[in-house]
Length: 98
Image (cartoon, rainbow, N blue to C red; front, side, top):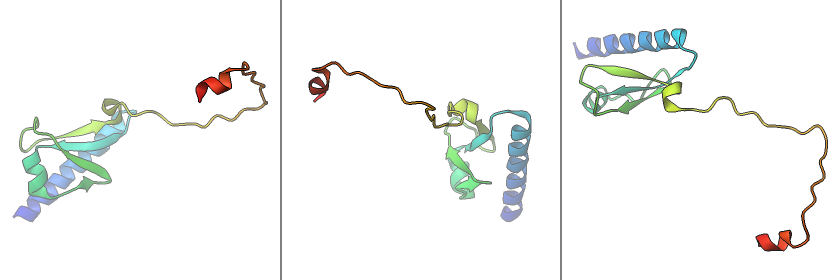
């Protein structure tokens, strides 16, 4: 019986992740559950998303954490200069930094 409950929980959470990702431009980054639920299920992650204990969550509930809520930065891009720029450092400025 407990195994069936785990499968049902996994199905519901998986569908919620899909629904979130289909309706939000920001991807899901984690799942929050009551610490008791996290311990009872014994899962560390679902579909690559970490499960985080949240004592403010009631038992039997979960929350999909959005990247927007996390304040995660967007894509990091490395800048490459097309031309060389000469920089002039005043004569005592180099020694002042040391």
